Length: 134
Image (cartoon, rainbow, N blue to C red; front, side):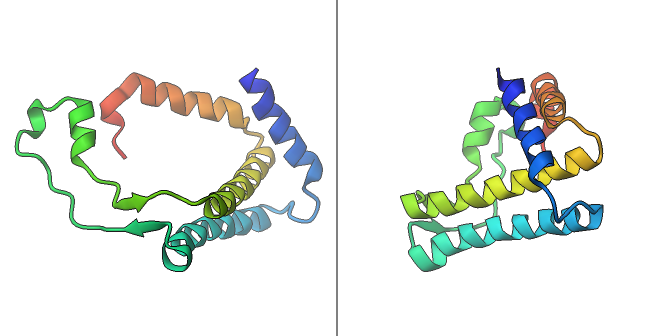
């Protein structure tokens, strides 16, 4: 069922994309949509205030080699405090959706199946586990 949703989404994007069919247009729109996501998150902090960012240097635990993955993940902070309010969540979700649209557009142009790419990445993460640090 999920592959149908991915494929339907990718096919719908292909049918609805009229103006931005050039790879240069798609790449620039993809970059613009990423910037809009960043801006929406920043506005949730600076304009709305529903979230705060409290960043400092990550400190590696002394017993790093002895920690399991869950304990190691708990030792790092996200630097985010609070939660998105409904309005900010709507804006961020809309911008992420827009980004997915242009990502699917790029996949269409390159003859890449978005769902297959998703599955390959999932398999890499699932197979390599904690060794997939990025």
